[in-house]
Length: 256
Length: 252
Ligand SMILES: Nc1ncnc2c1ncn2[C@@H]1O[C@H](COP(=O)(O)OP(=O)(O)OP(=O)(O)O)[C@@H](O)[C@H]1O
Ligand SMILES: [Mg+2]
Image (cartoon, rainbow over all chains, first blue to last red; front, side, top):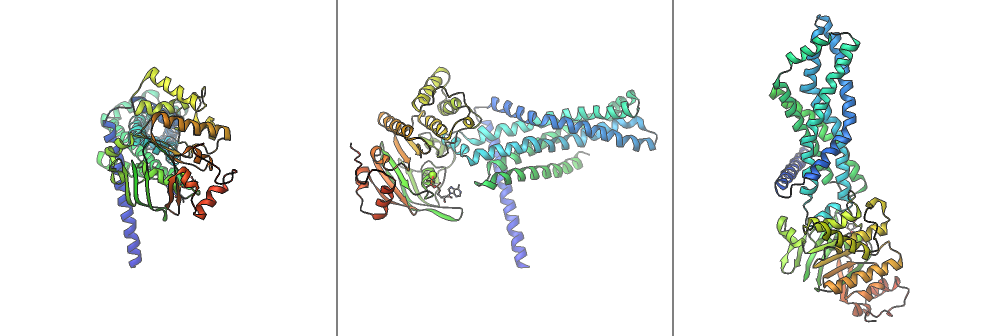
């Protein structure tokens, strides 16, 4: 019993100190961002990196998510004779929930893991130490641009996800199942409020921060060993996915 | 002057440095020798503040950098340049951009000035025309030389070289040694080199220090070092050389 308590205590202590380290990491990176020089070229490069890595999977998952939503929604709504509401069902689930969450998960899997691996390799091959010796702060040069890129890139990808998903729903609902096209778009227009869009943007911005924060942090503190890099990448993907889902629940309960 | 006092460091639960006392004379080339895994690279990282000692002091011209952090440490580091054992070139940049990096980032130089200095250094390490390649496209020895160019281009007060010639053919190794010594004479920087090139290092170094069991077993002028009567050190420095000890004369 005492041993169990002791172990639990140690676990909690480790957790708290790790969380503290993560907080200091992200705060100092943003503090370094405020100091000149502002690395615009690095930021643009990183936004491109996130977009380039994730665009294909985002479009693919968005299309199929929209299509399956339309399919499910159609058969449910038909029971009540309200197929006309299909558009709003698809659009609201997309904009409020699935767009931000699924896009962020896809970004984690593609760009986030690549980020962790890239920074981890730089740690293991002493490139981060080399930055230090040249009096260039790695948080400013390496981490801050990636954090900003996450904040910009993920919302853009979410916007694409939403649009592609709604067209996917249109494809199945209207073209395949014969819902009236006018009523599909009208339902969207009358049901979606600005509040929903803002909520979606807020979610995608915060998910963007979670992905880039966790993935750069795990890479930056990669252990100097052969397994170190693999462990770091796995942990980054798992932790960032879990945090996205937990944070999503909190935000939703506040926003509703 | 660089002075280490009682520096100890444990890594991964193992003691690596167990009380290193070392004074490195300014404006000279000091070479650190010792067996593989003895902690030579760890020692260099303490001198430039990449690692902090568990106990002890690391003095750089009257400032103890062992307890220094952040901006103050950064200021000290501006006086250093280091060649890492694995070269530590930035993968995402070309060789040219790697060598230009400290000029642009550390000294805020631009344009033709950068190009001229980078190309001069690349030529000195025998890499002219290779500037457009990425580190992944180079051989191990070429990477090492690119890393050397990146360190030398800074023309710092203190230069640290971690095995500058490992993995190079004998001719190339000789030309790198010549480059280091001629640069050192010309610019007068304090140089600390880790090397396994025995006996060559006795010919080029002013001082030689041997790291053994986490301490400096012997630190002496090159010629004096070769006349040590410590049997272990004699064994270590005579095994490597094909020329029978003590035939190397640093003056000649
Ligand atoms: N970052 C680190 N984490 C844990 N252990 C380390 C770390 N760096 C070095 N060590 C350990 O410290 C010891 C000394 O390593 P170091 O690289 O300084 O040896 P070395 O003398 O430079 O050897 P070589 O001649 O092979 O380069 C080794 O046992 C190594 O495993
Ligand atoms: Mg070494």
